[in-house]
Length: 159
Image 1: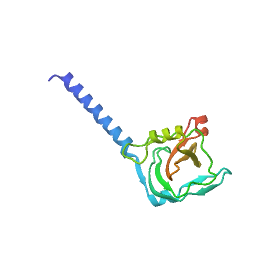
Image 2: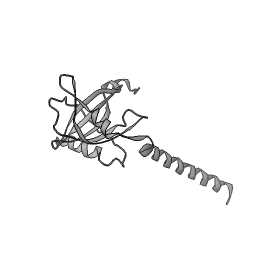
Image 3: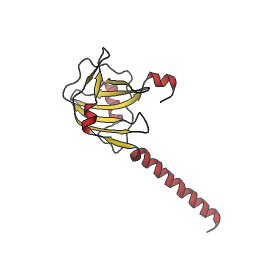
Image 4: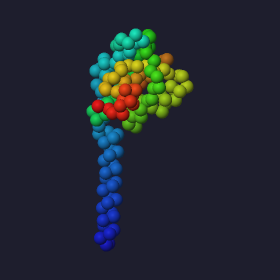
């Protein structure tokens, strides 16, 4: 084997190793599971008058990551849909890691487009320029995610 082949083999090996490391970090490394009790207790909904009310959530499963304010995702059930919750304009569920099976951004997006589910504002500016949005199904299933709001879009900066 000549030195050129050795160099190319080493470069390809380093590229594959780097790709595998980046994939692992994006899919597993930065995410932490949210404690189900704490996660369920911290859920609120914003009412049309601007006040917030706590939600009574069951079967809570959530993930979050410290590296981005957009990393939060949750799946849970609600005993009763919140009364007079503020609708959320242009909800866009963000894709989560493939191992978080209870949450499907593609499925939620399709249901939002068909009108089978409605999205409400949970918390405005939970992080600067980021809102917490919840999609609520008629049967009580609910899914949450963080989404950039108009403030962040105007500034193009997430702090």
